[in-house]
Amino acid sequence: MKLLRHGPSGSEKPGIVDAEGKMRDLTGHVDDIAGHALTPEGLESLAAIDPSTLPSVAEGTRIGPCVGAVGKFICIGLNYSDHAAETGQAVPEEPIVFFKATSAICGPNDEVLIPRGSEKTDWEVELGVVIGREARYVSEAEAMDHVAGYCVINDVSERDFQIRRGGQWVKGKSADTFGPIGPWLVTRDEIADPQDLAMWLEVDGHRYQDGSTATMVFGVAHLVSYLSQFMSLQPGDIISTGTPPGVGMGQDPQTYLKAGQTMRLGIAGLGEQTQRVGQA
Image 1 (cartoon, rainbow, N blue to C red):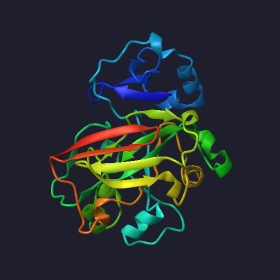
Image 2: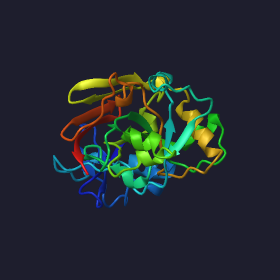
Image 3: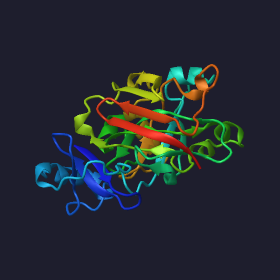
Image 4: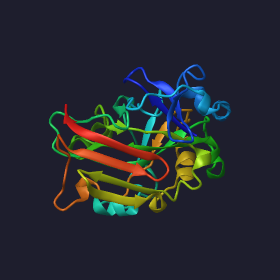
């Protein structure tokens, strides 16, 4: 299934994509794409609904973030060896874990705003993993049973805030609009291998990132198991799993976003995002 949320920001309704790629309204069947709806039982109930019986969503309707009421937005740093190299840092021996504020979350095609005082706002296409079953001290062999599905994430980052503003990457990762997710949550059964997905990102038509989840240092199952040793993971929590090379900080000379530019990015099987860049 491809699940989504549609409508004005703050009042999104649940939806689903039918076999023809059209959006359908799930209102009346589920309150939101969140919580219980993401559990195995909730997804089974949604899978039993015939999308052709649901009302159509008007073409051009805004698509919101594909998961509602996100509890934790967990991110993994330097999880591609070639990205670590372009930043001049060593490949980590264990996953580097940080958080993005959930207030950074926005729709996949919403405007991304450069924060006030920023000169180094950067892009990062990433595979998002959405938790569907509580995970606490799970093994790597058990980990995938706790995944509801996957989505595209743009882990927008302000590099000066991230690196030079007193530590803790969260300051460079959490500005409003720095977490576009979607367009869809694609359930786990539709993705044969999350470690073999092409991913890319363009700015104003120039392709900067062109990679694959195959080159992750730590794969999805390892990350879910690893994180569950330090905190419980709940349905609706999101793990953003790192980015391949090609970020602005890695260019020569370094290249950062400017108001008026357009980002376009996607992951095979998970859809595409398009964001115009504005100024806060």
